Image (tube, rainbow, N blue to C red; front, side, top):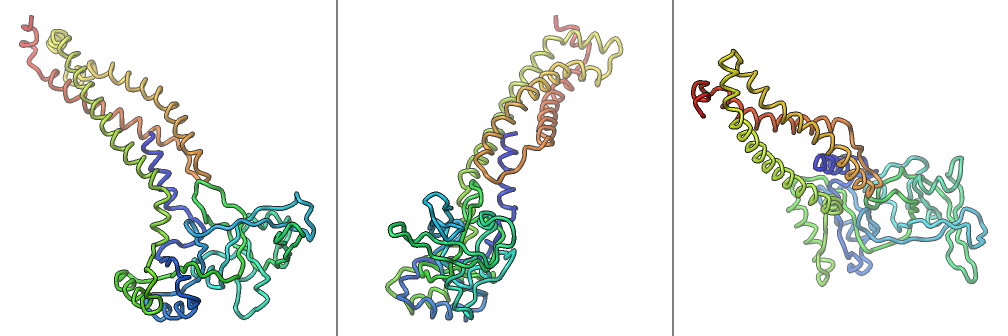
Length: 359
């Protein structure tokens, strides 16, 4: 039961909609080593076939930089009415490159110089602004406390919540600011020839930053790394489950052999009196089947309690469905029956004359 729940949760993590497209996103690190030429480098990257879009920022979902700031929704600050929000410094290509869904409003645009004083927030931050349409509302960054300084920003867009942290955590309020950050780049690619693409990117990198090491990773791989511990737990659980079943079957086989040997004369007498093979198999198996049912009744609530506690570590988690207990219980029953029937069939097919001569 535990093994099935672990793998269900891992499957849930990898199949759920996390609010952005993590597939085929290449992250370049330490691009501040380009010495202010990140814009030129981006233009060179867009010339490569297979590179669809590029955004310049070190604030990436899952693994990028993090910056938490205090914001207020009123033009005054009394020291208590602030809200902590994650702040990402991005450009106008961030949302289209990561394919984040805009629920309302618009994206940043280089055609609007006023966007330097604008923000795009997620739905969690929009709830802080209260009811009504948040577009064109003001939020205020607490830039200084002494003397107090609040910097106003206009909300121009609202993103659907996306999981920019691990699924162990709830989505928290997020603010995107259109400000330069040259620490990294994210490339939306569309090609199967990854080695060739990386080679072209590396050549352009060496031409513009020969002294800077070329460092990259794929966003999807980084996402999967977050749950390596859970994957390891699942693999270990699967191995130990298989070992436990094998050992239990050996013990069950020994018990059936012992029970058949103890009742060998009874089996012979019953066959002489007209009992057929299914009757003998049922005679020897029913006690073991009863024990299997008892073990299922004991194990199920214990497994539910343990795995329910394990799932509490995830803010986003699957449910422990009733079918898990049915499928696992039936599997245990079938394995036990296969083990017992093998031995009881041999006992039932034995010559009754030989059985009665045992003593």
